[in-house]
Image (cartoon, rainbow, N blue to C red; front, side, top):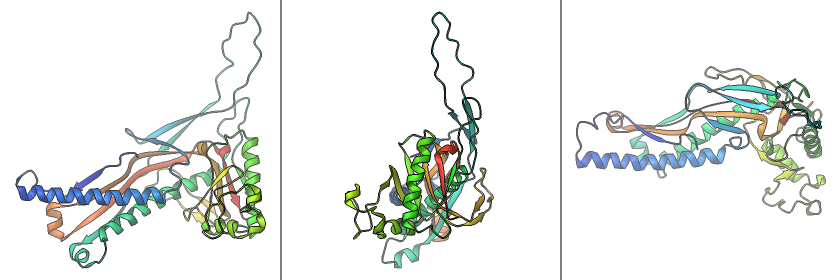
Length: 336
C-alpha cells in the first residue's frame, strides 16, 4: 500500500521535557494510533472495489505521472539478404495523469463522549473515515471508466486506428432486467474479444439491486448448476462471481442514473459527464490508470492540543488521481 503511514499531530512540548510521564503519554498515543490506523486501513481495503482492477502507480516526485501504451504491430516475411531496420515508429501514445488535491475525512472525538460511550467510539469513527475515502476513490475511477467507454482511441497510426470504447444498450427501463443483463455480459465479452482485449483482469461493476436481480430471477439460469455455476446459492444471495469470464462486483459508487456530474474544485483530472442513462460497467485492467501520492494515511492530535480541546481530531487523508488509458477496454451499460 502506497505511503501507508501514521502521524501524530500537536506534540508541542515534546522537545522540552523527557520525563517518564511524557514517555507514557507518548506511548499511549502511539498505541491508539496503531489501533486507529488498523481500523481505517481495514475499512478502506474492504470498501474499495476499483483499486486493484486498474493500473496503479505510486507518485513520489512531481504532480503527475506518464503512462505509455502501444497499439498493434504487424508481422511480415523476411527477404533473405535484406537488413532488418524496423518497420517505422511503433504506434505509441502517452497519457499524463495528474494528482488531485488532498482528500480528507475527519472527526473530533470529545473525551467525555468517549468515556460515556459503551463502545469503541474512535474505532467506529476510524472505520467510517476509511469508508469515506474508499467511496471517493471508487467514484473517481468508475466515472473515468464510464467516460473511457465513450472515447475514441488516441492511437490512429497504421495498422490502426485502434478501437475506442463501447456502449451496450440494455433497453428502456431494463437496467434491472436479469435476461437483458446476462445478454449484455455475453455481448460485452464478444466485443472485448473482437478488440483483442486480454481475458485476464476483466471486471463488471453493477449496482446491488442489479446483482440481486441476477441472483433472484432464476429463469436466466445463472444459478443453475447445470450451466456450470457451482457456487450459486439462493439462500445467502452470494456465489454469483462470474459471467462469460467476467468477474462481477457490486457497488453503490457507480454514477448509476446519476444525471450530470460536474467538475469539483480540487479535481485536476476531468471526471465530469452526463450519466443520465448509465447503469453498469464492464472493463479490463488496462482501461485506466491511477496515481497515488498519499494514501491512505491516518493522523491524530495529541499532547497539548488534546489537553486544550479535551479531545482529539482523527483524520484520514488520500491524494490520488485517475485517467483513461485504453478506451477499447471499456464498456458502459445504458438503459436506452
